[in-house]
Image (cartoon, rainbow, N blue to C red; front, side, top):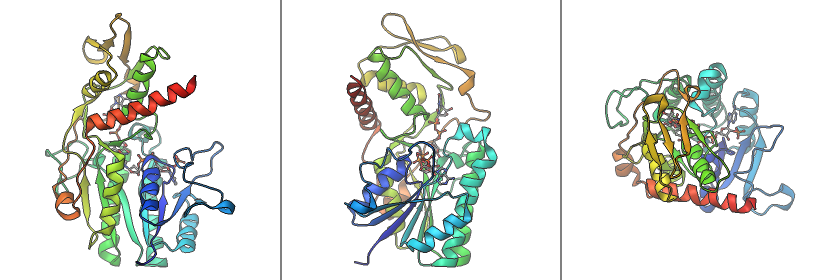
Length: 346
Ligand code: NAP
Ligand code: GDD
């Protein structure tokens, strides 16, 4: 088999960490691009990284930023990978309303920088773009497929839509292997701390152990199609192994509201919660009548994506992919991780 070399932009993120481990197991040499920060940002990949001087595996890190064309070009030229995975993004939808220009520079133009470098350096490099169900936004049909028209509702969604189309445009005009994943929400123990599932699981575990009193959230009634990141990185890899470049929806086909997700987490933790009130005044109480969850306008978005539910029929048919971990498996995995951290606290 030809030696496979992967280059991952966004290696320090949730998906970057799972994808790196998945590709190393498949025998790849994996190169990742990390940003320089004043604090360490590699906790998700510390278990696979070792100093180049005492190298234990084929995992290498390079400094770079996809807002920096020179760095993007130089890294791709130096590594000359067989596959590039662009997972790098300012990935928080709510934050994208506060920093729209930076979000666009990273999430839209960052993709263009990589594609342009591929056409100049080696047109045989395969390219994966991390697209998002956020592009469906104010959904025009249900469930959403590869053919559903887009209607993004945030600077993040609009930037991802640019990346989706520029990837198709480079595929069609430069004849390169460039594919889009349209991934629905996927979570894991390694999920960023400010996304809603992680906020809920972490807080309820801490509340149960009396280390926190209350959790503050925003909209309890939006619905999401949540899967496990472990399943989704396998789909990402399969997209680049397909016999031709194409675009794929990756999802579970099931949806739950934020409130239903909270109830499932509470059930798994054997915590009884009682809901009272309506709208922004809706609150959850424990057995002793302590308020443990309330809502605040601070966490509402200028424009919301109310409902997402995908259809992965194309991925099932063409990639032989389907999700293996359901919502309860996901929640159990996230809870186990948090409880373990809390035990380590002692
Ligand atoms: P994540 O945990 O937020 O990771 C994002 C990664 O991008 C991090 O490594 C981050 O580095 C890096 N990054 C941010 N700005 C960068 C820049 N300017 N230059 C280089 N790297 C930069 O996101 P994720 O959940 O793993 O998602 C991976 C990708 O899939 C993202 O593009 C996201 O938008 C997309 N996506 C995610 C989901 C989901 O539900 N998770 C669904 C659909 C699409 P730092 O660690 O230094 O911040
Ligand atoms: N983050 C957050 N924090 N969301 C909250 C909160 C809160 O306190 N309270 C309610 N929500 C609601 C949001 O309004 C949204 O409707 C839903 O929970 C999910 O929010 P997030 O977990 O932040 O995810 P997202 O759907 O906005 O975006 C994620 O999924 C996209 C795919 O559809 C991110 O991973 C994006 O990068 C990804 O593209």
